[in-house]
Length: 105
Image 1: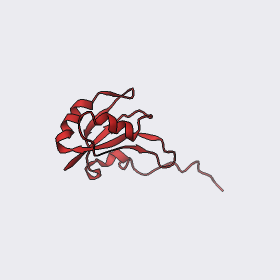
Image 2: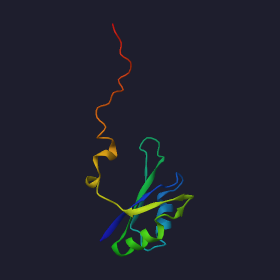
Image 3: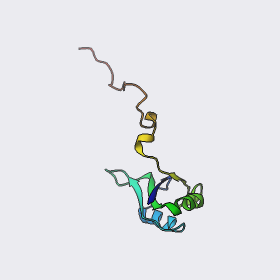
């Protein structure tokens, strides 16, 4: 079985291949993906690395808080999207009020 790790605070220049090469120092890497913007293709500053269960703890210990491509990265076990609080996406801020200036006709 494999575990998915969340990798945060990535440098804009970090690629999926670079992420895979870095994490392969801890052991086998099943997959590595840097998340990108759909329209521009630019990195979103985070990604995911999938590793076998027996490699996960070593990879976290090796890389969490360490420098990768000039940035101190955050590494932890990824959580399913359903486990995230609603506030992460701005859902608890109430209705939007940016309808522009009021006009009288």
